[in-house]
Length: 542
Image (cartoon, rainbow, N blue to C red; front, top):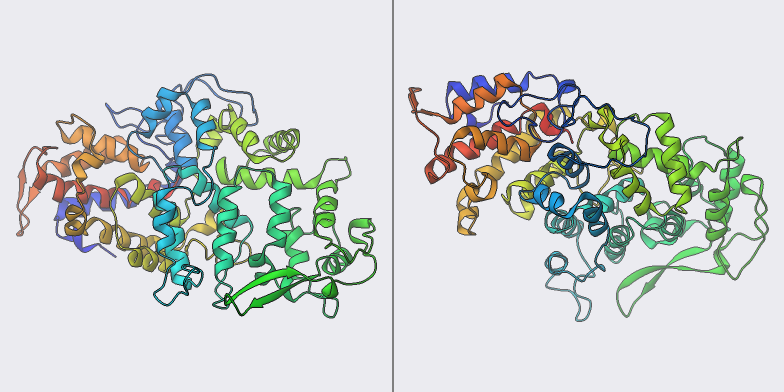
């Protein structure tokens, strides 16, 4: 399906677009060009490949890398920030990567920043009771709130981690009642605030949280009717992996241990909470994972279940949780199929840090492995990552309704994972409808929202062109770098040619020198350049 904006640009743009769309995905990587003078991609790693191609880093080594090139910084940002915002690579270089990582992992207290106040305003409805404003949001309100956080948090990494945990602990609140929807706000904020904290503590609090208890039937799991849903997912998805170290008998015993919580509606506030009720707890001892859980009506058994799981080991005596979490984090930040030696090394790093995620991730982000050839192979971005990254990188904006509309079409709504397993992984992220229609249409909506953006004071030239640029060459290289698009020499030259040609309504092509300071050129050519680059296969990678 050809975009109407590009149709209007004439044959050269259509030819160029076809050239870009036929590029092989396997040859692409994230980050911009390593060679602005030529635009040539770096072999084996796309344009985000090593700035020192003769150095081959051990892809299983967590040994620290001592120097970081511009290409290294772009690779780091593409994996940890939804994309590359203008000025951020220079900021990282000036601070030093280690210092920058420390700062990006120091999350501000939830609710303390202006962008969060703006997001919270989206939850308020006119008929909210006094003192409970924002406590009765619709499903759409919650989605808009979550998208606003992703788009506007100055510390993008906090939202990257928040979404990582939304994917790991997949909860869809669509079936919640109106008095329960507020629990999802608190759940997401907990994940955002604790994103780099201790996994054991987070796992326990997630297990006891009202949103999870309702979603996986924990609030209906009682001594009268034990429900296996949470027990099964607790091991299968959150801690151990499918059929890894537990039996069906263990699931049955665990379902009895995960009893004791129920809904409680407060007529004074109109809100439902989930509370511990000893009368709902299954009586007698339980024997999950070969251990005895003594009966105690005064407390739930959730803490005991979490600790038994944390201690559960393989035949060699290594706990299974660290290995499972290691693989999950590496698949998100490092590569689709991380080397087994790296999985084991990173699991040991997690163990040495008592499953505190932040310090272990810092070791990874500074390691030789993170900048190795295999780690630079492009990871497919979720569609919400593409949408959020494009908005954050360019500064172009649309209405909340449009964000929600297109992300719904892409089946990639924040706060609404498509299943208990979260969002699709690896190649399963590719959705032919979203890739071929929904995403291009969203980009078109974004770049043609010119009047609203300019009325709000947006200047596309200042936003995405390099300071002091004088030619199309500099602009093409810089914008491709920002979008993480890897261009070969031919593609790059075709784009430069496109920027330097005006096409009349009858198709006549007239050579013209693209002038970065010319607002007419910016309005037409620069916006079209964005659309064309967003169709390149490497735009879908990080």
